[in-house]
Image (cartoon, rainbow, N blue to C red; front, side):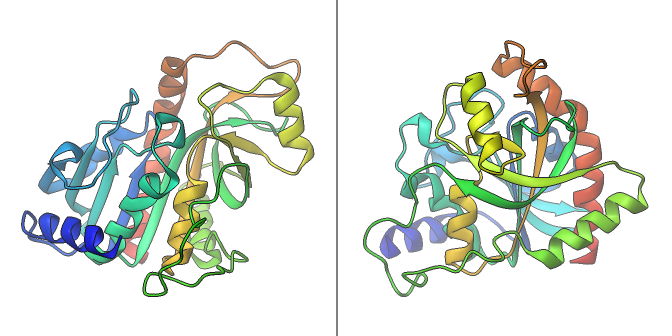
Length: 269
């Protein structure tokens, strides 16, 4: 993997002229944040050696370099999922690439289903912890040069970043929730029984991404802030048939609020 990583990073570095400080992963329906970036270069995933390619609607599949609110960033406009047929190592390979490109912080966004009965569609939820119901991306041979065999996850979602984000939301009058995110493989949306199970084990929201990325980020000692947009509700009495298009539309409603939080946070970082 070290050779692949070096080759991929070298290829990207030959095409960019900035060293990003912050990496941002844009989830389903949240790609409009990319319109706020002062772009210096943009590379299709298909043109990056050993990079997966996005196959899901709402994931554009580009690595975007530039400035957001004056801060040098790299944004993944589109991410990869286990359900697309990629291995967990392939799903999380871009996180290792972003770290090697020079980022000091990672901001992750996603669309998720709310299982907390107090949540509403289009709520923003700052993730405080997660429950991993997917294969762990660190299973297999560990390369000591990339990170430790056993990774401490007690501060998986960086407390300092989380507190900064909450203060920014309060300052701008943006209502938010906090909670635990359960990561599942998908690609099916959950049954009512599964929603009940996820809630019973301590989660507030459930989705098909983020957790593997965060595990690898901690493996390489990269602080993470993660934000979910609640796009549907897995709560008895509120459960309705949902489509991916509706998820994208619901996420888009919350994008301006999430954009405001991220732009303000970048300045503080």
